[in-house]
Image (cartoon, rainbow, N blue to C red):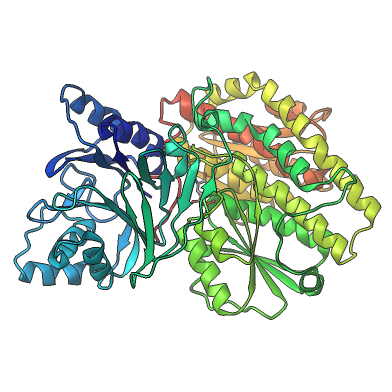
Length: 608
Ligand code: AGP
């Protein structure tokens, strides 16, 4: 959950590092720091605030140096502070380290190093790494790093430079993402390749326990024993524009508005002109898929809510049981998995520690794993037997929106694909379903084009101290996701609940101070939601209803209604979530919060 960038080349590294840090800030932003090497001259600056403050600090200083490391932090060990900000050094200021991850055995290592006379300046686990490398340093930086790594347990992406070995950056990863950017007479290390897009599109994604020695002219990759590893160079498929705001006030709003084109792209990617569903490099045999008897979907956060929608979809289309579990729960509950179980792991980043750990648990049980992921070359895609990419483009805002509907779209197509293999749906039914999916982007556009009403409703409700979101059937997970969107960017206590459960407890919460969002689109159980609405009104709850255009009766008893275009209920989650994303966005932005970088959060939770 931190951002790392390094540069080595012929240019002055400072401005390149600062510019890259700004693009990595979504990964963590409670403090930041930079180290610049000019031969054996070291400059370090750190601050407990945003990169713009660090930039202001450095503006007046003409710091030159062709080697640099930068870091933007999401605190794990040691509170956000200048002294705990990275980079960290050994006591001689000879070894300089930036780190993303957690050194789990840092306490024991710290005690041993203190016995050797090391003095620690910070409370961080990272500082241990700098002292440890220094302890083993005998003139070759990468050898010292290898020896230090043998002592370290935990997750890490590390960038290391040395005053005594100033013409290289050593980079290594274990469970945290790190890539090498390849330029002309210059090279980069970076947590997220979108941060160096304006320098290069040629990248090497480091794998776990690979060490890269990066100079301005070359990149050598080896394993922990020192054996050379062949380099696989990838080309980034998207452009710099996709990681810029493009005129929107926030990335979140831009990404909400990108959803129609993302879903259209997914359909054109995976549905052939003849109407067949085809997943590229899908190396799980059809013969296995035809025989699967149950599915388990694992994910975290928003991806977990998409997984819950996937349960309704796949159980309806394929008629096999679908379990859904948080990655953090699955990995510790000794789950039951059979030979004909298929595990699906859903993750936007492909780096979420709990989801990765759950996948490893599944692999230990010899179960096949299919991932649905948005990031090419991410850890999850490498550890799965097959991956279906969501092609949503980089999602920068911490609050996930386009990745969510992209995951759901892929789940619809996967459900139809499996239904065709297992012959649980007729070709005609599948074709009709694909036609409905093709109509979704324009229906989303309709809502996006009429967002003024939603902004007005947001204005009227942003002072409420608490919200309750209610949904039924396939839109119960929509209530959970709508609630997560609001709470994570507005900090208003918000719960999502199955509407049918309201009388089993939450109704006690209803009074005139509680805003209740009811997802009341046309449904075979609309009358049940209508009853819930009456029960809420009877207790002075303030209701915001999501209803299908043409619903005449709802306005008789609910003042604040957001109408959405008509769509078959089974496909409605791709539509009902749009007003909830906008409602959360407008409430948070009208309250003046940093919508793209909410407090305490980070885009990818790469630690437990
Ligand atoms: C959602 O808005 C949050 N950013 C968070 O819950 C996120 O969905 C979760 O951390 C999972 O991330 P992933 O999809 O990258 O695995």
